[in-house]
Length: 278
Image (cartoon, rainbow, N blue to C red; front, side, top):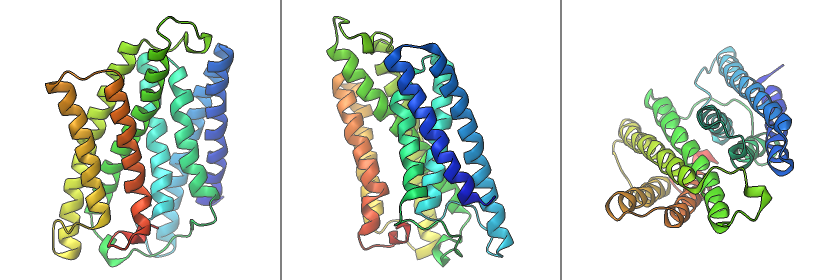
């Protein structure tokens, strides 16, 4: 069993986990929720195994490197981080409804990697610019940040749905965490993601200096990373200094994640030093 096949199977495991979380929320049954948790854990195991096997495969081809060098590999790692961070939150808050709004993002990421005809899963030698020890630190930091922002995106929608139902009329929203808990969790995830995004930008600058002889060059990826950083910095500043909470933070969180998605995917189709990501 090669890594691509293992990760393809994991795609459907994540899809099943997302379905079970949604079913548990809609039908208000605990059993699908418990099954969803165990399915997500199995998915993480498969995702981890796929990453390890791909790493070993690269060495067997004589081009050994960490599997973090192209769009396919980054999507695999992105899905893994989303589920791992989610499972930590589920254990802490003991609320599986959050999984209905977050695990589908991991499924979509891995499904896009595994099933899209436009993405190659072949293992290729590293480009000269990628042959740096800063690569691993940069990619890991960025995608932990992205995963936290993805979860904040899902929780922001939960907050907006719950806040609109102030009289508790909708049975579907009855078991949501309170708006206060959702708002606090959203803020914590954004702070966590912002820390790792900052580390990712710094390590990326050091990597750029070693690869291209400059720390910053206003490449489209660099520019949009900075725009994303400013959106989340504005959100955190507004909450701390202006006292913003609730809907304003939720809307900014959603806008921030849209910027994350464009930084991740959109700029790959623009000319620049990061265009190898496509």
